Amino acid sequence: AINPGNSGGALVDLSGRLVGINTAIFSRSGGSVGIGFAIPTSMVQLVARQAAAGGGQVQRPYFGADLQEITSDLAAGLGLDRPRGVMVLNVDPQGPAAAAGVQRGDVIISIDGTEIFDPNGFEYRFATRGIDGTARIGILRGARNLEAQVALAPPPETVPRDEIVIEGRSPFTGVRVVNLSPAVAEELGVRASDGVVITGILRGSIAERVGFRAGDIIRSINDMTVRSTRDLEQIAGQRLRIWRLLFERGGQVRQAVVRG
Image 1: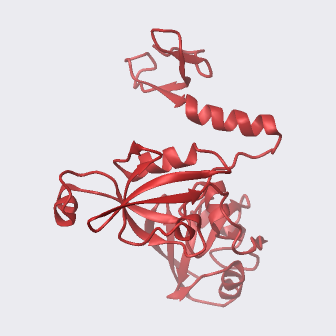
Image 2: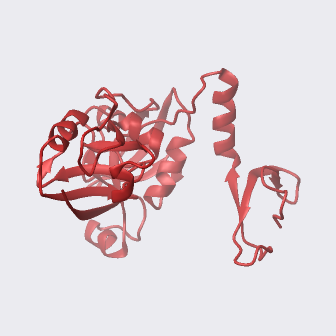
């Protein structure tokens, strides 16, 4: 059991082998109910290696594709005997997956020989490979079984961050924003896409009162697409009576209306 004071300690199996680092328990009362959480050793080893190398920042490899879980209905439509693998929805044309020949519609069934069942499982196994070298990706493309050697490279800075703080009087006054790139998305733990992401909010600002949070991704304002921090700065400088805001928070797209 994981009890108060165990966090950060070793989680071992019956043979004394390290399997993880304890983090927390699930409990409604504060006492142990037998459900605990730990960081797997594979992830700990990745962080420890990079820390020992003195890089100052943990980097995880960037795959460069959006993935979808294979449901029972989708498996039947694809002619699979059972739900397994993940389907490739979109491929970043500048990413490692595209460079290795991965295509939209491919079904990824394994990584380095280990079978894959869902996007989270693939992303975890790919991320814990570390930087440098390649990962062997098993693919179903129609009736063909293929393999791709995907480079284990850090996420690219495809666009400059161009960090700014919005001033003036608008719902965005007081937000600190950067352009969203794969590298920024990895760093902040948000989905990589076009747009700008809020990295901070000045205390007492209009943006704080509106309810924006760090990590929110600004998509559009009054149907005007926001693709860069300069777009946001330009739109925020307008005198508008009604602000129709479209933004993403925690993977969910939200709408809000604010009066000027």
